[in-house]
Image (cartoon, rainbow, N blue to C red):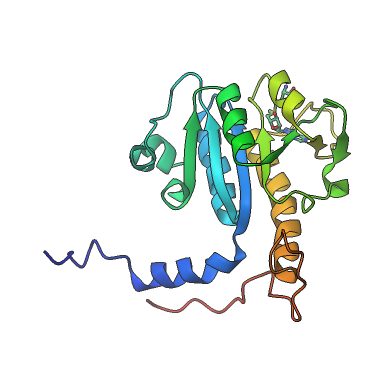
Length: 220
Ligand SMILES: C[S@@+](CC[C@H](N)C(=O)[O-])C[C@H]1O[C@@H](n2cnc3c(N)ncnc32)[C@H](O)[C@@H]1O
């Protein structure tokens, strides 16, 4: 049976999906470790989608999310705060930090954690970090109260901090993920625009654009 008109993706949706493809950051994963608040998960997913991060992993030991991505997409409590970004973002859940680390390691990913505090051996401020040195990169964000776990810190290559100048201890999870992922994706898009394949390091004759051309909105 022919799909009904309603079920076909709208032309504008298809056009947009094609247009954003070259700008997405390949082999870049945002990991949210044991988040408490579903609204924060939604905000991070919104940032992940908007900034062109390839995937989001959620470590969910309390099993507050469904395992299946399709079920996750239909969860109103997640779809609302993410303004439907969950529908357009690859999201995978894990029962534990150990399980997530094992998965990332098996796929050859290097992890960096984020924290307002000095953690582990190598600490950098966000603007000092080079996020293009890793072919496959996972950027971790910690729990709203406890922050990032010791296990994640032990496993990571470096700890990244957003400089702060106020009296408060930390930024909110959603806000910090937006700031960090903006800088990481900016650097990696710049790199992708100049080099053909990360492993071959072949420089392009003409760099690709790093931002999309903006046009006035047109009707569908
Ligand atoms: C509300 S904070 C957690 C605060 C917690 N008391 C701690 O010790 O980290 C939630 C998460 O946001 C990120 N975050 C918040 N402020 C940050 C900053 N200034 N630099 C880097 N990451 C930050 C970290 O991933 C952190 O685990």
